[in-house]
Every structure is written in C-alpha cells, then in structure tokens.
Image 1 (cartoon, rainbow, N blue to C red):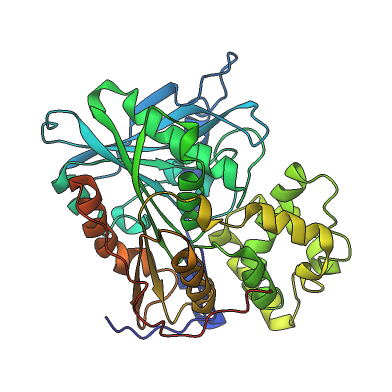
Image 2: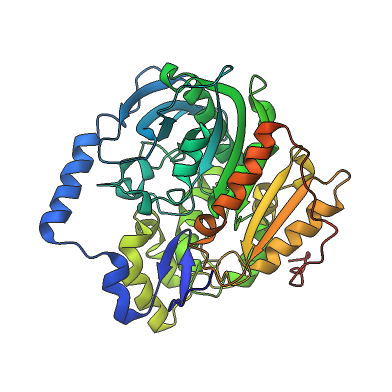
Length: 419
C-alpha cells in the first residue's frame, strides 16, 4: 500500500502535519460542536464515577450501549470495571465491549483484548467517551467488521485514570497489564457477551507495550487462557526510544504523559534538569489534555525549536532504572508473539523493533513472527497491519502451530542495545 502524506510526526495514532494543514488535522470544530461535546461529556460523568465500594478485578460496575457507534455485525458498549493500580490498590478502568450479533459457539466466544495508543489523559480523548464516534475514529475500526464476522468479543480498555478518576499510568507495564487482563474478565462478567476464557492481546504503539505487558503478567489471571500476543509498532524497548527521540518533536507528544504519570510510581524521579524549562512549565497541562487538541501548541514548539527533554534522560541513573523496570522483557512472555512494524515509522523507530526481534529470537524457545510494512505511517500501522494480525490471531484461537520468522534476515540494522 502506497500513500503520500506530508508528515512531521505521528504520535500514538495522531498525525502532526505542516502548519498550513493544522486546522484540517485538528478537526477544528464550530463553537456549537464544542459546546455539544462538552455537554456530552457532562452527560456521561455519572457513568464514569468511581463507586464507593471498591470493585474486584474484572467486576463490571456499569455497562451501557454506545448508541452512536455503528458496528457492522455487532453491538458496542461502554463499560466501567474493577482493576488494580501498580501497588495493588483497588482502581477502576473504563473501556469498550463489542459483542457480535450472531449466536455464540459452544464453549463461548474467544476474546480479543485491544489496547490503544497514546491519546492524552483528557476525558474527551478517552475512546469509550468519544463524541459521535465512527469506526474511522478507532485504531481497530478497519478490521473490527472482520472480527465480528469471526465471532470474537472485543474488550478494549481505556486504561486506569483515563476517562475516570485517579492517576494514569502511562507505559507502566503492570498497570497496563492489569487493565487489559481485567477487561477480559469484565467481558466474561457480561452475560450477553458469552465470552470464553480464551483470549489474545493486541495493541498499537503504547498499546503494543500494554499487549506484551499483559503477556508478561498473564499469571495474574490463572482462570484465563492467553494463547498469543500481537502488537503494531510497539513501544517495547523504551531505552533506545528515549535516546533516539528525546531531542525530536515526538517527545512533545509522549513526554508529557510520562512526566505526569511516572513520578506517581517513582516519587524521586527527577524532572527538573531532565525536562527543558519550557516543558517544566507546561507538561502537566499538556499531559492532562488530548494530543489532538494540543497540536497547534506543539507545532508552535516545533517552529520555535523548543525541546521537551533538556538532555537524554538515559544519562540519568534514576531514569535508567525506571525505564528498565517498564521495558518489555521478552523472556517473561510465554506465548506466541506477532509484531507488525513499518519501516517508515518515525515515532516507534523500526531499528528498535529490529532489536526487539533480535531479543525474541535469542530467547531459549522463540515463537515469534514478524511482518514488515513499507510506506505506512505510524498512525496507520494498526489499520494496515491489523488484518495480518487478525489472521494470525485466528490461527492461535484454532490451535494451529505458531510460525517463527527468526530465520529471516532483518531489513534494517537493530538499534544499539546499550542505549
């Protein structure tokens, strides 16, 4: 697939284009539409309220149809369910539950647990709280009809603290894992879903990190059976990504989310001196918003040459330790894994995914399959490569032997593992 796009950067599925096209990308709305969106968010506020009694992991607190989202062959719901923060404290997450209309097979429907990419922490950018959503608005919209035809349930977490009260935990592996795994439990607790205990994880960008994190921590739910993990452009090896991207424009997209959420887990993690003075004054505001709404400000930073990080955070020992904690450890993934990556990606750099491939293939018993795309943006990797992943997932649900691409040469040199 070939497409021509004027791109500065793509962040977790959001395209940053030339200043002249900013209004188009931002989807500038009329005052009336903005008021309607605000009114819509207010109307949903009670649904997303945390209950007084802490729900158990995977316990469904509330569920209701998403009337504005038309899913061919299925019905979409928003849900609120119990999970845990990284320290084990009770928390809630919201998400979407999408159920095929056709009757369930004997034994129930398998579950695809989807994890989205970086969007920001604002309520209005939360997938299940999207105003007037369409399939085109969703990373998984291009292949969702195929999934409905195959009879799978989709459980799509919003992640803890995004759209709900409480702290968000961006790229915090155990929190993301719990959000994903507990979304499968929540699907099983919705009788109409008729969900089985068998599931596969799949995610894009940050969600690729979440998908693999869920595989690392699959033993948190011994009653479930994980049979595979798939990822599109996964932010898996964080050290090389930080080192190669800290002084690039993309850092303004991912940096605020890290700066807001990581000090919650690492209270002594230094920001002053690691972030630039411009970032120090603005990261909290940017992180709590939505990337789509901040593009104009970010493009201005680009024009003025402002960096988010003052220096490579991987030169700071505390940052190195935190990054090591949250980087995907392929040796802890005990299920077949599939990754799709574009060689044109300027966000999750392909050489870091090549290094990830090397690490998987060096594992004692690798079951790893890799698909490389050509002229595809980061934003479109999950859309273009999604059907490849869906076919691979079908084989996992069918119990077929998993393919292994480790004998194939890499199309690009891996990143420096010492970064």
